Length: 229
Image (tube, rainbow, N blue to C red; front, side):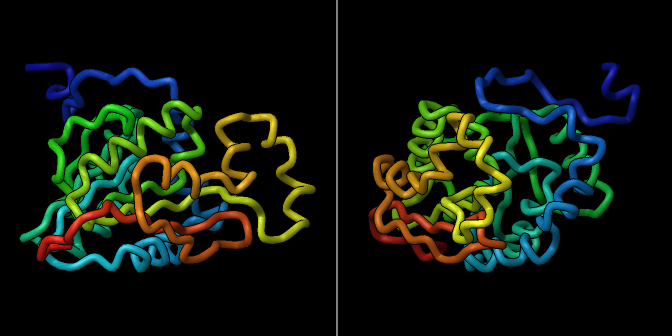
């Protein structure tokens, strides 16, 4: 019997290497922190609405954290569909697995990094990235977006929610120090659209904003959508 089995915790497998930011330090209070920052249920519902999920679809949630969005996706696609969440942070995946088991969710969770997805090409109808792209340096951002496009089916959609150029000038009084962080400054300058197009997505649309600082994007993988997309 492994230590994980003796402890009652699910085994996680090997920890992936990444130069992106991981958040193991935040696991004990991550969900409370999200709610305090205005990223609670209303935010999750808005993210889900941007995807327009349907029963039977296959969904990937990259940087899934504790799995809240992945579990919502699993409910939306039903037993005929599939929802998988990946995160490089062992503590996040452990909580996600335990919550899925406690709630009886069909959502799947595993350790993984967006810049090196283990899935075959053309596997998913929808890929989510909620508040994780700003954790990646520029080269990993580009690599991750190419990987997302690879695993999407033709006509599939990528739904990203992340920092964007502030819609309200007053935000600069608060966030200007973040311009010193290269992975974040790219997005605060409004350059994520260009990264998405460079990765081969077309069309790319900004479909909404959240509290003047975050934006919602949908980006399609060119090609004819299958019946599930």
